[in-house]
Length: 335
Image 1: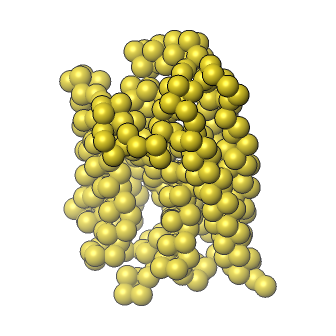
Image 2: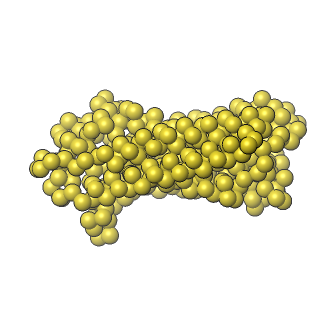
Image 3: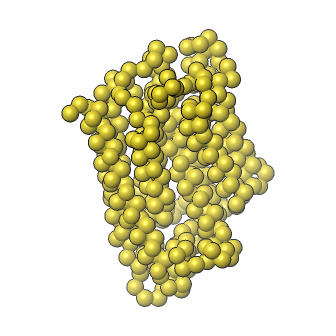
């Protein structure tokens, strides 16, 4: 077995572990949905105070502990969160396996392992998982587990079945240290945007339930009562997006510098350049509108969803539908 073959097997192993995590997180949400309404809505005063502080100041003086949800509810025994614990553990396992797959892929190719769509999907997924797990060390974000692991499994399976290419060297234009810096930062930003997207999606669900949605008012959605209030979720999404935006800004700057070195111009209106700029504009508008124009709540969350849709199109649609200097997907007809 070659290192490239081992990398493929490790990706499938990671996808399997993350699928187990997805099932565990989903089971945990189902258990929360089965709680009585009184226990589902009761929240400790300390947690409520922390949420209010965070929503108004953007800071988190009292991180949510891993057992914050277990303490919720003043009637009867708390709901067991063992399934969520299993989900976190298997997510750690899947992330480590995915990291091993990325490393072996890079060694097999003899370069940084993010030079085509297949590798971009692997590394972007890794960063999304790493951000989720990193945040979970400071606060209870297990309610995001099913969303993050679900997206991760989807991306990995799609990469294996649709984007896979043989591990080889790269074109002369990509044989530069900027491949490590420019593309690496872009992949990291994409992974971080993914976690922010999941957070905004939960925010919209919780806000709709609080607003009296008949559909989300059903018992199956009662787990939403265990999530932070929409304002807190929005604050979390904003901070995550702010970090990703800084990285994406560096992506544009680094890309321009690399373009001047490789092609003799900083900007050429190539489809990838244009759509990378579109992504930057959307998230810049979101951050500006929220901080200076008072845009908040559902409008801010919808902005995040639009921005992430642009990120996905920049990653897939631009590479597949348009010909340009950045057509490095490695797929047939796109070399």
